[in-house]
Image 1 (cartoon, rainbow, N blue to C red):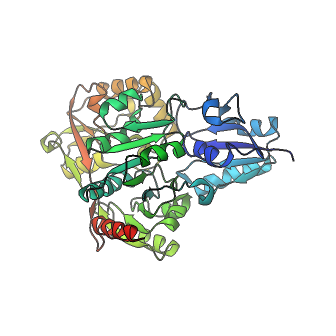
Image 2: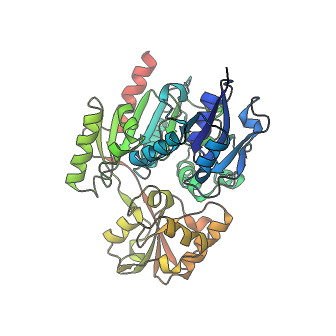
Image 3: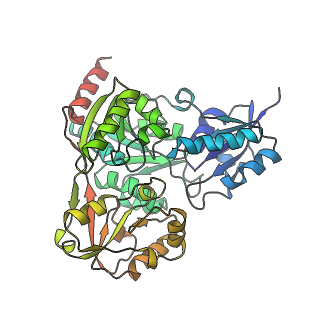
Length: 443
């Protein structure tokens, strides 16, 4: 029997997990290449032999996605496996038609073969888009379990943009661990809040190895999802977070609807800043997909260090990068703070953008008068710092999940905005988790 030749389309995350769980030791397939998109500078390297297994002694090359058709033809590829998230269903089908037209099958792997079973209870926090509020939901879950006297470990969706062998299993318990693992801003935005909250969080490349290590120190494990991807682990309880600022995305983005179908509880977040009409649209949509899921209405209240630095001031707003870029949001917590505390003006940073920051604006033309906190490597961090410091403003509002002042020098006055989760409806996460643990122990 001839091996089936396969390309895995990805973005340095789900693609590696799909390979590890389905293809790594499967002699019926030959993975000829990965392709990469969404994230800068993740192509042009190898998925290393140390992680690829005995069938791939030379590792597996990673090419830019723009080479896909050429690779299909050069290698007479039989199948292309689509393995990244936070893209429209229309986008996914456009890739399917391209692949099919060039002679290959187009595949989306399901949950059964890609979700790993744990020996500990798994709580999954997933979402319908990036920037919905998974992180504050995950922290709320962690805090609740800790208040019950349980040892909690969070495992984050992968962001392995550096040395993949060194990043096989990463454990973060202190801010020094962020330096040790040479984290990008995107990674720090996800790990630092857990660390600041006194928690432990894992990430990396090999999620079987990560899970087995985490199990040695946890009573309960939280899957802290990335983008709108499905969980890498078989969950015992699933929360899916939806965003009424992007109504309809729960239906028309991939794999948003999958997450809605998987959910036991759907957290409709940001009800304090969204319109009643949009909240109703999202509620109706998720109930039509999953009528048995229970709805948790939640606010995302902001917390500002010093509101006087915003009031009647000319401000620059720096927001979470992925939320503004492939997340497609037009604003974040920084804008909410600027409006709530009556900033005089939000400065447009685009005329001051340099190098890779300018490239980001050219790629994501929907970003208006906001600065995405891009920092994929030292060079881009320097570009971000230079862009900020060129801008004439009274205050820089830092709306990202991390304190940018810790990693770059901001010359202007600055103020940090953070946010939390506050349930508004009949269900509380605390009561849900107390009931869950009681029933889990009785099994």
